[in-house]
Length: 87
Image 1 (spheres, rainbow, N blue to C red):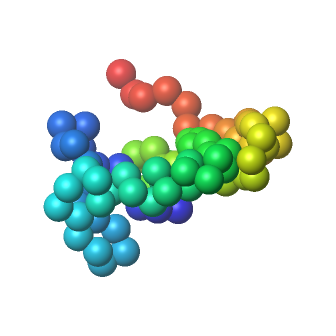
Image 2 (tube, rainbow, N blue to C red):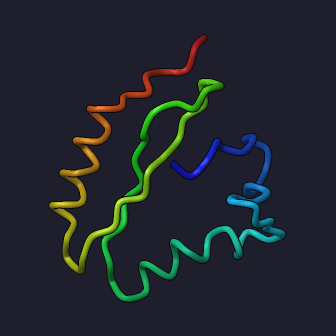
């Protein structure tokens, strides 16, 4: 898993894996680069961290791989439901 989410009022996380980000572009570049060659990418909830915050998983497939990527995303979501926020 990639780490805990940042607060909602932030535009992007401060960093991950010891690397600090200063701009939104630095944070979004890895995902954008996967879409350039036409690869299929999905993000799916993958459970909760120790503080009860949601974590996500990026799923990558080949060109025109929407059917298999969405099937895997659905399976992951069923195995690791995050439920609804506490009210």
